[in-house]
Image 1 (cartoon, rainbow, N blue to C red):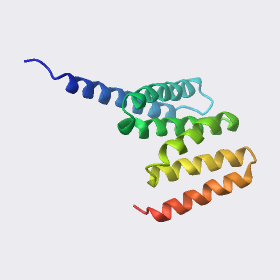
Image 2 (image 1 turned 90 degrees about the vertical axis):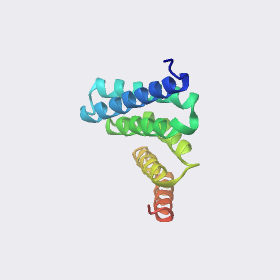
Image 3 (image 1 turned 60 degrees about the vertical axis):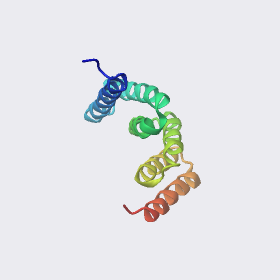
Image 4 (image 1 turned 30 degrees about the vertical axis):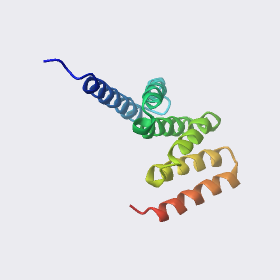
Length: 138
């Protein structure tokens, strides 16, 4: 019996998503100073970006999570300048759907701004996170 090509593609996508989730989980178990953590998160971003470019509607949330993980890691390593681009991109990606993913990304962005001593922007991001959370309590 021949396999359906779309089923194979779906199966490959699911395997790739599992691999990316594994990379993110692995990075969280490493020390913030670990090169393995940085490499794992960068690989997760690269792979999730490829999935999201092929199917944005389905894989953009994974890309946003990967970017947010990269931002948090750089922030924990004391490198807020490197954390800003992925944090801002994660917010941009989650803004259309809103909800909890946007709230978490806004908090991350606010923390990055605070570490950069950009206090007005930090306060604005945290206020938006609070407003978004109140608007979507579920």
